[in-house]
Length: 139
Image 1 (cartoon, rainbow, N blue to C red):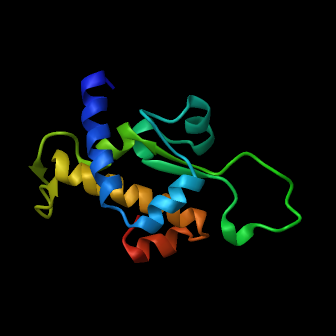
Image 2 (image 1 turned 180 degrees about the vertical axis):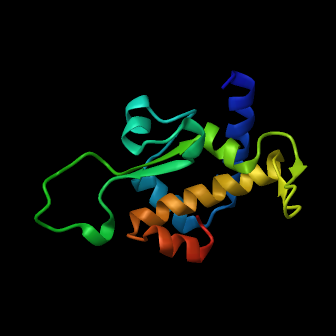
């Protein structure tokens, strides 16, 4: 991603972060949010997906699976992937889905996809599975 598009994305990300509840901000003080253009090639191979198919990833042990007997491990981390979010949102330009007329692309849709992705990965931190997140509208 070129530097101008990266800066545009990051400005949208900043506006989303500013709009989130204080509880999410407190969590992000403990669980770092790392933003990258795409996942590492090794991760893409492991997940068997393309760079534009993954918006985010929670790396760590869910709170619901932790035990006092656990050995220290790498810190939990939430990853956001710019290219995946842009692809799922429909890109920089606005358009309407031909099948149902849903607005796609543009800053508002990208901003919403960023918000959904952050909340989706935070949900994984708290032990929510994909079905739970889909029911909440974060899938």
